[in-house]
Length: 260
Image (cartoon, rainbow, N blue to C red):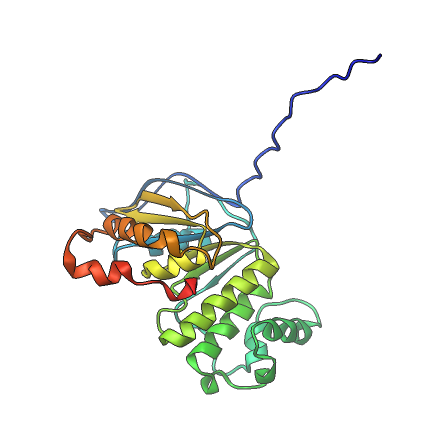
């Protein structure tokens, strides 16, 4: 009888990160903004970045977006990346579809813009002027402009901060739907702890130019209510709030809208 030889299972290799920073430091004059920062983001991973004002969030995002030259630093980011800012930054003298297609090569620019605008629910506003859009519509157009380029890395710089609460909830759902459809790696910069918990699977807290804390959320979106209270308290503590103070009790107990 032939003996069955069982070979040991070899784990699949970890995928190469889309973003990799090693010992990244950035200074402006005598001010050190980032200090020996290490960061990796895997393909398709959704990461949120929290931090107080002045913690280095904007500098980190600008470095990843290629808006600041990281000369001499070990920074690896994909060539295919796109950024959505708090201000939609649409050109008022170009129609919505032309804003979305801005910089696209070839003769199918309008077709690609129509597809992208259809994904964000703005196919009926193709020929509108940007100044006629609501705040939520303008941000949806900005998302379409980013996604039409099929980025490996999508950078979101507080894109919902200026929106009303109801529009923000709708935008959260839209971003998750687009992320599931296209699977870019996402880095969301936000001041909103609840927004980070509702959208991301990994949350980083930046403090004085360093990653001061990291939290992973294993629970699926829509099933996070049992873990968010303790997680919110930890994140607020990382951000410098004394969560033992009764003043914050109601805030810590509040269920995030994105977990409904």
